[in-house]
Image (cartoon, helix red, strand yellow):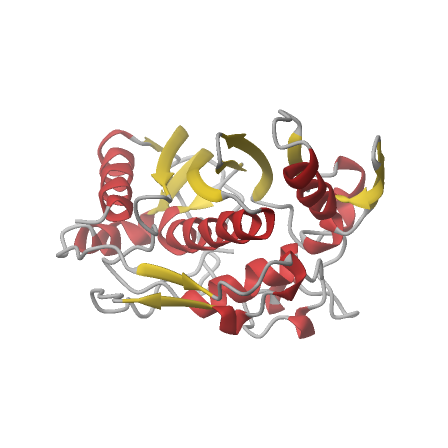
Length: 277
């Protein structure tokens, strides 16, 4: 069993068995098919640790759409874009306005420039500068939850901040997430932020260390419960191997074709997942 599967199964089991239910309460989310309330069971303050030096944390219970995960992380962190036409998948189409953007959200925030002691630059360039010039710093952070721009965002960011920390020659990262639909988003977020740590490490001459995923509200929707129950009973397979083009040394030179998963064996994909909006 891969470590990613082990953590996912334990988290889901804990939510299902010990989670707080919103049944009977007023909730914001509704089911897309009939506008009925979309209730959840949740656990507060879930922390999962992935040692990226030991394995790549792609779930094997079902396949992760790896290329789409990488495409979105490049869209946000490398292109710093909020335009849906810059994204190959259509996962953000529902959140776009008439101008074809998701407003001042995600990539837009990472492209805003700030005055740092070492010059004016955006948050991504600041991370790159510090990893190369002051890796011992405890201030290598990003944050896209900008309160002054929330009303102009298509969706307030779920995964909103990262803290990078270099220990020896290894790059670690804490990913903070305010809310997570466990079935729809957990495997996706873990995969893409693991890739991001690999990107920053390779561009900075470092090795990968830990990805620590902190989720404030980890929840399972009521209609997802039977799907999760079936999913976590499936056979698990060894973790796949992440292959990255070793010739890329500049963070902005990575393309989607520079990443691949090898020996990725999984259970079948889940189809027809009910959507809460």
